[in-house]
Length: 109
Image (cartoon, rainbow, N blue to C red):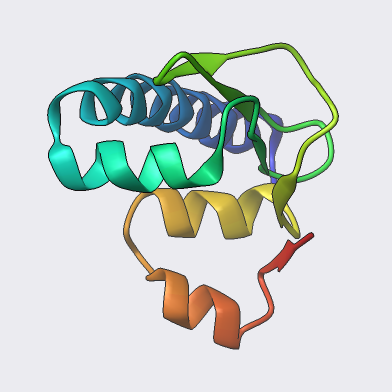
């Protein structure tokens, strides 16, 4: 993959992760079902989503009913894409989570 395509995929994945973090925070405040789900995870729960080596990543922690973006922290749950290509396909909706799982495109720790 040439460097222009790689930079483009990184930029798209970074934008999707930014929007995802904001959406999770808004939904945790305004949607009753999401609020209950977030509360069940517990204060301080930390989740990390990685898009492959050198790719963008998202790390969020639950604090006072809010989903806060934090710098890389020890995560309770980590979803790691095998590579940037797999992350790009999933984040742009080309493939779904079930298909990505079936194709072993990510790991869950």
